[in-house]
Length: 242
Image (cartoon, rainbow, N blue to C red; front, side, top):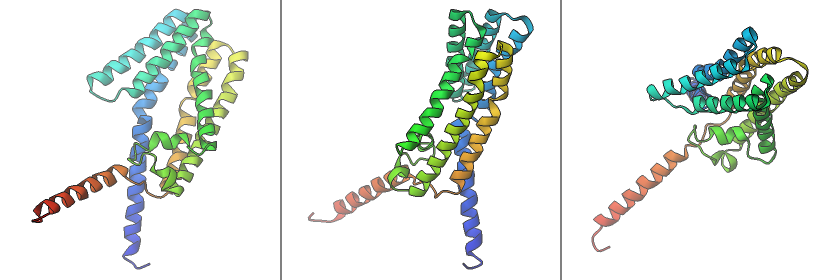
């Protein structure tokens, strides 16, 4: 390696890390997405801790979720994270109101977490790791990593295992608490476990992908192929007698 090669390789590595960070930020919502995930549950457990009123706690949690969506719409920003929060809170509110048990506000989200953990693990076992399906379009590689980029597929598999096992560990804490703890205890533990496991999974994903081969930009390939085809047609049209 010459003295000129090293800076070039370092720059390429830095660019790959920057692209990976931006993709993860876009896919998982960044700081704002985390706030939108935590705030409704935090408001619910805070109000319930103070007055033990299921109805007011549920209404406040649902109201703040709707406000977050309205703010996103007003700012013409992506609403997928805020909308997912609304649906999650709405399911929790409906379930808790139907059973009359405030702890059931958290049950749909817990079941979703368990299902997501199993989805990460099962899809990895069958060779189509879920994190690759999520991030592939963000990196403009779609499913090219499955057959054309084995190093990247391996990184996606490692990341999916990390997500699956971290979420399973979270479920192993929450489900026993659902049966043994009261609503306030469960709620505060659940709020405390919202961000740290998520950050750990995102960080591990970044570590695995930052060391993986660069994504294959299939959109750029299609554009290049279309451009070459147009050039060929233009050259053919300029040739007399053809």
